[in-house]
Amino acid sequence: MPKALLERPALLPGLDFYFNAYIDLQNDRPMGMAIGPIPWSSIVTFAQIHSLDLDDLHELNHLIRKMEQADREHDEKKGNA
Image (cartoon, rainbow, N blue to C red; front, side, top):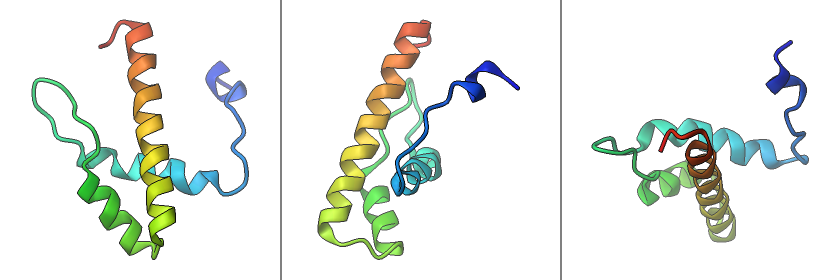
């Protein structure tokens, strides 16, 4: 088994929803000279489809932005930015 899979972090119960949302919304990123952030409108639409309330929408947005930041930092460490 690949080392990355053996060392992957375990998510707390319920966080898989947010991680899967992040993965699903990746395709909505604008592409140009660089890859842009996931649009707010896409996050809102995702929240509406999944019947999230306003507090859950804010949490979803916050966690998606944190995952984007972590991805950028990871890419910068690898020299891919």
